[in-house]
Amino acid sequence: MMIFSLMISGSLFMVGCGLWSFMKYHKHLLNLLLSLEFTMLGVFWLMSVQMSSVGCESYFSLFFLTMAACEGALGLSLLVYMVRSHGNDLFNSMSALEC
Image 1 (cartoon, rainbow, N blue to C red):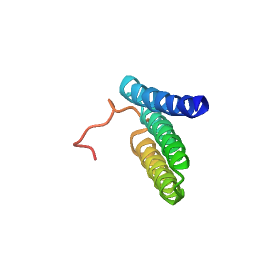
Image 2 (cartoon, rainbow, N blue to C red; image 1 turned 180 degrees about the vertical axis):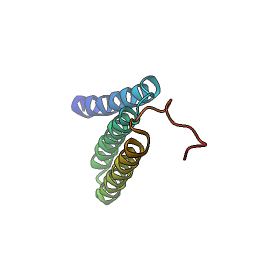
Image 3 (cartoon, rainbow, N blue to C red; image 1 turned 90 degrees about the vertical axis):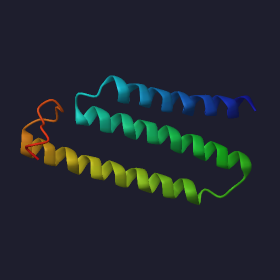
Image 4 (tube, one colour; image 1 turned 90 degrees about the horizontal axis):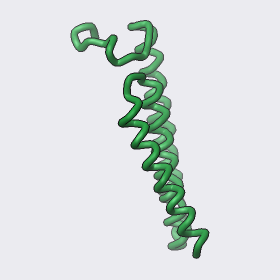
């Protein structure tokens, strides 16, 4: 039972660190994408631990992991577009009138 609570607290720590880095380092798009992926991995780990403790099948957690991978691919494509159009990934260099 101690391992179960340690795994839950580890996944909650991952989610907390991901959200903290999302709020703290928001100047570059790449930093935001990495912190979002770290948060999604923490949520996936928490979901997997909870579903394995209940005894459910893990189809929903695999679907969640697939959606997180699609979100990461979409974010990277936006990053490439932003770097090609603006020259960098700083949010301060963007303007809503330029897009």
